[in-house]
Length: 90
Image (cartoon, rainbow, N blue to C red):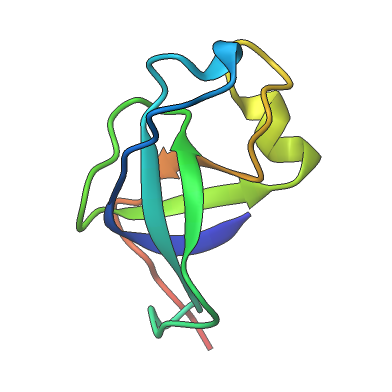
């Protein structure tokens, strides 16, 4: 799982039939101190509650396809939780 911050939304006019009604969001990956790492990705919202500004954790590849309903839709990343707090201990 990876930590990220939702930066915005994506609108797709043509989708796979299994993705109808699925919300797509732009997510900036973060490290444990919430510093941006890498480039933004598009992630499907498996929790149906994430929105711009939210701190989330997301998965990639096969795990992303497994997280969605119906399973195995063509997604590369999926948001699987909303983070309440991050505590990094030394």
